[in-house]
Amino acid sequence: MRTPAPGETELLVPLHEGIFEQPMWQTFLARLRAATGTQQAAIVVMPAGGEDEIEVRSGAGVEGYARFLTAGHRDEGARLRLMREARVYALDEIVAIGGIDQAAFADDALRPARLTDLRAVRVREPGGLDGWLVLAGSTELGAAQGRLLALIVPHFRAALRAFSALERERARAQVSAEAFRRMNFGWITLDAACCVVDMDAQAESLLARTSAIRKGPRGRLLPASPEIDRELTSQVRALADDPTARPKALHLSRDPWIDLLVAPMRLHGLTGGGQPVAVAYLSGDRSSSADRREQLVGLFGLSPSEARLAWAMAQGLGIAEAAAELGLTVETARNYSKKIYAKTGARGQADLVRHILTSVLALA
Image 1 (tube, rainbow, N blue to C red):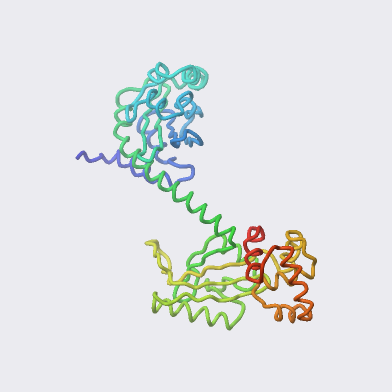
Image 2: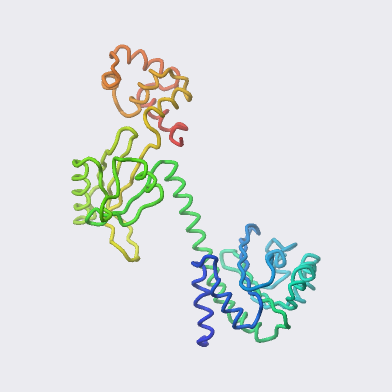
């Protein structure tokens, strides 16, 4: 197997690391341009569907290489007819095989920018992603530039594969984050001393808008209630000693409603920093009880008094408990409940809870 020369390694390492740069691949493209003596280097990436291409460039020249390389050839079969995979093409070849779009780009964009020649190669990632590597210069490009592009092809394909995997994981993470946001859930990982190791954006938002729990000195997660603080600390220590210990739920606030489930940390990364032993799932209502009662009035046509009782019952209080809390007689509460069931279509308290907690209020 051929071993890359030191100068080639200086190109290949930033090619693989370039997916983490912003903008991507800038170090690689700058070094490629310097190594080939060209005025501009570019990478174009396009998904299998032929939309939302990415184009990054280094050096003075033009933009719009994606249009040059794909105009009139957006589907896979047409792309293959224009440029065979892994073969290095010269400017004149692409124009000759292409069409009016390729010829127009050469005449209207490249030549006014004093870019008289070009080399390009197309690479397909196994998952269906297409990538193009382009060199453009003010003098004729020769075999040396073509050989270097050919050498880079397998490494470019590997870089595209890593990019594709990263994009898939990013998309999955965005979907999961949106689901957690809609359910008002966030997560916080904790070490054995109950200090925060990491948290998601939803948990940060929940902590910012409540006084029931906060991130205290030295990063420790601090409930406002000393009793709950002791329970949380005890649970985290128990999980540190025994990762198979059962999760524990802690109630932090009633208005707005905020709960915490402290569970063992099942997945451990290989990154640096504190080692988490527990994950705290934080669930918090974005609205106060007053806001929720107003929403129930609008959603089900309840009167303000009925809405107050409906929300109390949705929090798990029985008729008698809700009546005592709201200053109503039990008989009045029962009369209200009958009207609530009629207006919401619920057949009892359990059905009422389901109606309210699975309605659009859950997304409000």
